[in-house]
Amino acid sequence: SIASDAAAESLLVDVRSVDSTIQADARYATRNNFTGERLPGYEAPRVLLRREAAAALGRVQARLRSGGLGLRVFDGYRPVRATLSMVDWAERAGRRELVDSGYIARRSRHNLGVAVDLTMVDLVSGSEVPMGTPFDTFAPEAHTANAEGRVQRYRQILVRAMESEGFQNYEKEWWHFSYPLDGAVAFDKVIR
Image 1 (spheres, rainbow, N blue to C red):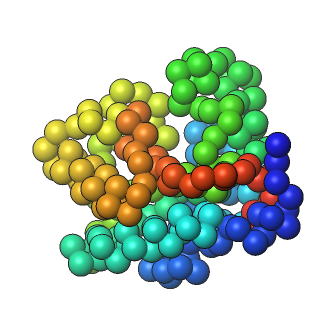
Image 2: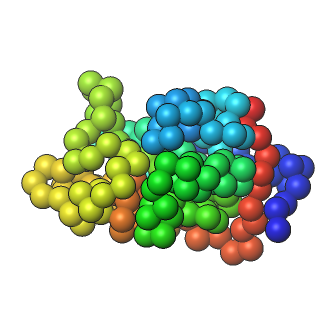
């Protein structure tokens, strides 16, 4: 079942309202994503999360800042219609294996506002640190543990910082983290 827009309004917050130094690069509100189109339900380039997850993300940002790093967030809360659109894209594009293998979920923790996709940036240069693959690479190279050298160190820094505030990494995607929240419900409210 899908919770009301009023419930979404009261439970979701913009991550930048928690810490304005968190960078938002809302990929699904643009054509710069794996589908090549803006996804339905994304009408503004904002990243929303459940209040509890957003507060934890603010603590991660503070923790990373001491080491000269910061967060750039690609996605947080995702309207149900956008998830369904991703599944539809995979089927139309002949990429059903992406759904079958779990890279594209039919029901996502993003719909609950408790999952976040992100990377780290160097606060001095402003550029993303090397993470080995771009965001939304559907391949073994993107598996969190599948890295070495500097890339592996940066992935470990991100995982440790996120885990220290309760987030759990999805092992097939170095950028994807989920915040455990009992009774979380799905939303389909348009992001405006």
